[in-house]
Image 1 (cartoon, helix red, strand yellow):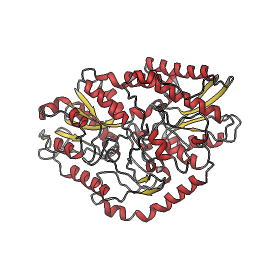
Image 2: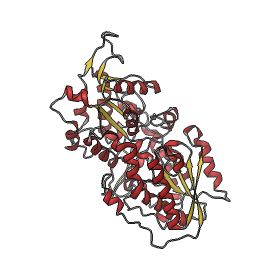
Image 3: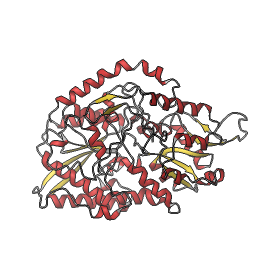
Image 4: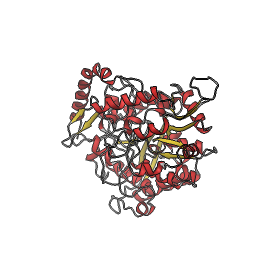
Length: 496
């Protein structure tokens, strides 16, 4: 059931990793760390029968006699909707979240009390302090929800319970992130977990959109969906499609500008770049079959990836780099929506904006780096949720059952509602694009190095900004191993 898919996200140096997508808050967030997740199981997002017939791992008749379970979450609309139906704009999804919460309450004999606290990136320190202070009681949070750049440091400080020591969380179940469990367990210790309760992982996935009208005009004999399904969608094939697509508007004759038509528009930060290292299978630190962790950033393959991507940006007439700020992201979207760019890289929730336009678009995963790479890999930006059980709390066993039930019921009845009402059926005339969404969500992935990025100094520059990666790495190598050794030592000394 589990799959371990290697990946890494590129992160800016010295506790600054990735530049985020989205609003200003998200831009600041991913300068700290970007993480990714994977959903496992063989049901697939279109297989409603498998989901509806799923059976809970909890024992029948389990009842906690009316206790209150306090659930801490961030008060921001792109994550709090996971637990609070009042924060959901779509009526159908709001009802699904409400009904799920009520079912868990009634089944387990508990009252679920979501507590929403300010938790954008600028308030990260305050959010972490809220959790630290809560360890002193008396009203403990039982379940903690938050981004990994906040939860990982707290786990290393000993605030959370080892997931593997809890009675009721079935880490082998399809509703939990099997890749996450495999990759982030170290010496039988795992202090945060991800699963389908984290709906925010879906709409923050990095994907590639293409203008179908432009594509079919340029390549009437090609079918991009077939290319993806047959495993032939690689970086080399992507370059072939875009490098020569350029029509000069004459606004700045002989000079690229936003009035021209291009094969691909890419801001030099954020959504234009952040998904590629994961898509290409680049890694920073990996865990081998024996559980040993080692750095892998200095592989020749990584040098090749950075060099090839840099070369495409610098030498391709059909690629337009339009800046490195929020305005560049907005400008790239405007170019795509006005048919000035055939391809754009964005988050999956960008589809909600496209839905209101006349653009005939399709969506595919980012390409593999080469034919040697077995699978497509998709990453999600850092804002999405992970979960933990408060170590100081007196209801850890009960909290584990509630978290298990919430994730199971999300898998069974909420995810499909979310998928359908917010994403899946936005473009009914393009069922192939719907199939691509299934593939994209099923290939969202993560590795050990990205999960613990906030505790490591990262060696990578933003992809496409450095030509000679080997030289760039040379000055970083000696700095990295002490950080890794210190973190692993801390993990090994935590309560198991």
